[in-house]
Length: 459
Image 1 (cartoon, rainbow, N blue to C red):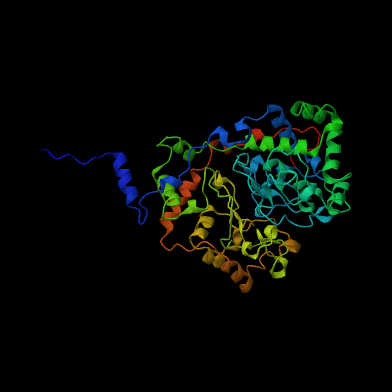
Image 2: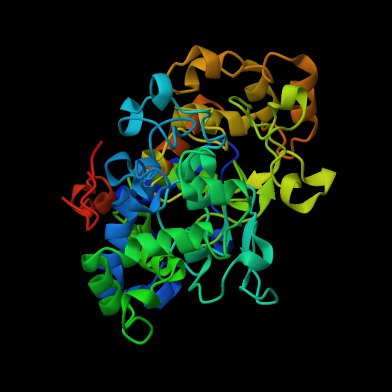
């Protein structure tokens, strides 16, 4: 019998080359997610057009900030890939947009930076997204009257559509983010007094503003015809639900090359991107252990020795540390733990980390290879904030203190992987770039030219 010839061809050569990568034989197929579908999103991925339009206007309108000088979009702008490009946001009182934003001058100078990085808004309309903020202080919970465990407790109203809508209730209550400082405006005063939901509270004051703008009244009527028949029916819950509807649909990202690959387009990934995928989902790098599921996050909390810079949250050394999840649970075992970020469009959304301490995708991936070494050797030029001597004089106090660094290192949960090298780094970064949805690269059309309040959309 004539012996059967060995199979040949580009496909076989690719498989042989893939198997030749040291210690990486194959991806664990059970951990590679199934393709994303409409059913994975709220409203099955089909928003109400009227609610979407209202939410778009509100997202870009400064009318819902205490001093009428900042919008949701300032720190989550379409032209900055739903972030702001900074390690730590310059919130209320800042001037400019994105990396050109500054801390203001004189009496208009900001009092403080926002202490945590502004997370991107991609794919937050997924049903998997039930935990918001870096420390998870907002979580869906049907046992709570509002449906959510949240910082406002019983003050959070009912009627919020999902965790994304609930999240939209909170930036307007923060002095550093949108409310302003006590004495500057009634919203800031109410926030300082802890009056969020009562008469004269933050949410009622903002709803009153919206009720006084005829164009908004019409938009609310169209978006909520069963609930809003006149201006007096408008609440900030309606506003939050509309903002969430806009965010959920505008920034859905599930048509990346990786998504096409999952939908059986086997040519969607390059050879090197597939090598990176095998590392990510295989025994080589095991990234999937935390970055699991369809949106590559377990939405759980982990301590991986991320460097701490900026003002922190008032914890630990000189009050410049951020204890992360412990601030929510009160459990010391949760110290320095932060929520696993989803990864679609990750290449667009730097700086990375809860304090934005990595401005290079390559460097934040390298940190995962050996977190403690990454903490010890961190390059502070990765920290991107507008210069201001009185604010940044102590930005590196934690990093400069050996005992503070040692405390962060001691909590690290991610062991070093000495088998990973620079070649594997390139493959993994290539794979992360394959998670970019081409529709997300140019989001200019998501920005309205004007908003109903008449306030400027662009600073």
